Amino acid sequence: QVQLVESGGGLVQAGDSLRLSCAASERPFSSYTMGWFRQAPGKEREFVAAFRWSSTYYAGSVKGRFTISRDDAKNTVYLQMNSLKPEDTAVYYCAAGLRGTDPTSHQYSDWGQGTQVTVSS
Image (cartoon, rainbow, N blue to C red; front, side, top):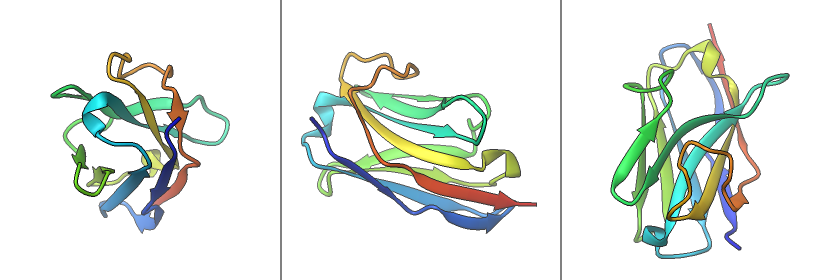
């Protein structure tokens, strides 16, 4: 239903910052719950951050370091990641769901292809 394309991943050192982008084919964003998830090799995909209506949600492991935002004019969602740690290494996925979707669940309707983030110590 919604095509999502992530970008901005890369290889960085601990303490560095990255800004991930998720370009969506559907607008307006106000009609959707938008989220970021990540998955490391051998681990379950886990919730990172999301927004629904006017509220934002963060996993405890990233709260205070990561910020989710959106630019409706550019039809794009962002994940600003600061003070990166090796534990943040994973493939990061953008997801979209109906506005009423539980923002921390995996029950989003559409997912991007993912972008790799690698943090060295």
